[in-house]
Length: 137
Image (cartoon, rainbow, N blue to C red):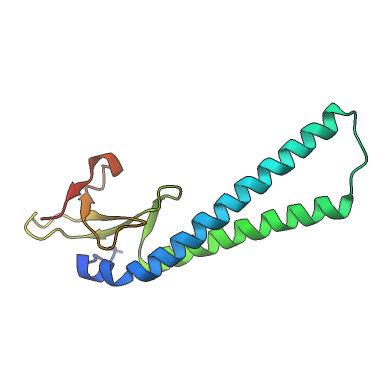
């Protein structure tokens, strides 16, 4: 099945929703990283102290919160995929959409959007990445 090809106008129309979803994903991802680091540091303190007593309810609650944050990140990324985008770098907020560049021939390319941009301004080939982004004509 051939992927849908987006116009820049179609991607631009999705940007408010993309920004919301990517913002949520980044926020939850940051929270999950901080919580995972806190859990790792606590485990290390327990190991160094020779296995101090642990509040099992607290550990369970932390683990459940970490699972919940992970689920929220995945849900946001899945919704972006449902819109037709492919998240290329969560921490940079990069999303590609297959499309055509006006005046660049008939070859499909990736229309490349980054969180914070108000419109799609760049593209790159399917075999290229962020570093090879080119301005749209």
